[in-house]
Image (cartoon, rainbow over all chains, first blue to last red; front, side, top):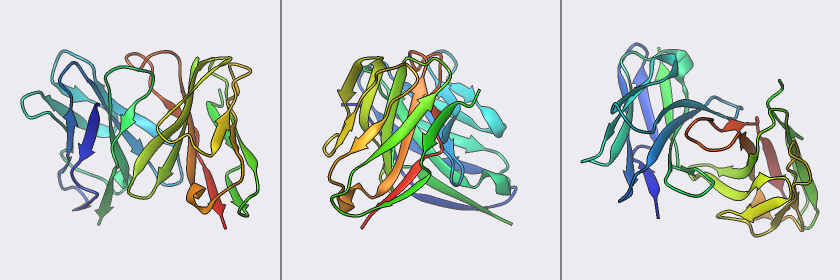
Length: 112
Length: 114
């Protein structure tokens, strides 16, 4: 069965520093990958998605992710974070069926 | 468009009580979902529906029931509430597939069972 593993439960970072949130997936066939963000007391919203084509995917709010098939990874990056990026980030996958499979989430805490 | 609307936002239940979490969307989405979110555990799928009159179990359906009589509404019913059902519940919808339409989430219902 497909699954995603988010390697860090919490990532503290200073404002304006770069950040990488790690996600590995397990699948032997085509898989579609997503990053969702959850701001405090809100539902999740889509940051970016990889379906096919270019392995570097750009999303909203300056985030990007790189699909790496050989390492089965889909890490999320931002070159310079803001306080407002403090949120929970979820990696998700879809291979078949009707539902996304979510990771356990990574809490990004940006401090001044 | 209001998007996905969940009510109530908060609720405290006593063990053994029952309640219905309401979810409605105004985007004419076919697929709707109920997830629960527990700290450090991510989102677990409870039930989903691919259209009016069609529902199916997800990963953690025990203790819950759903119905989908209209495209807009997808209520989640808790019978005989238990402390293990203390969680934040999210309803979500999407038009058809994940390739071209993202999941839209409501703002959640925070439920405590004591």
